[in-house]
Image 1 (cartoon, rainbow, N blue to C red):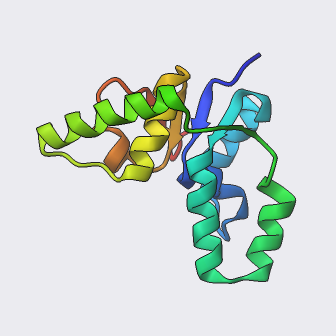
Image 2 (cartoon, rainbow, N blue to C red):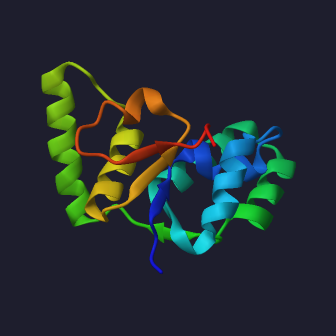
Length: 137
């Protein structure tokens, strides 16, 4: 079976967090790795944080637990077009959304996936995006 969920950075990073959100961990296990994907932007955002923290312990956990674990979806031509439309719409509405979150949303829409997130603040603003709050069971 193909992917159903696209994990945003807040969900993708859970396995290496000191105190992961239990409901998020449960949902990940319930769906299984083969039904999940990660956008390249979430990897960039996570690795950016790892570089800033400069913790070999966190890098080791990332390499052991997350790196290469899930199918990675790139930000391609279709996602770029969706991104442009979304960014314009958000600006016209006066409800800007962070570019990383818009790019993740664009990848999800272009692949007809549901964004799994703990970051409702931005994703709930994006029209046409399917998302689920994984902070709840």
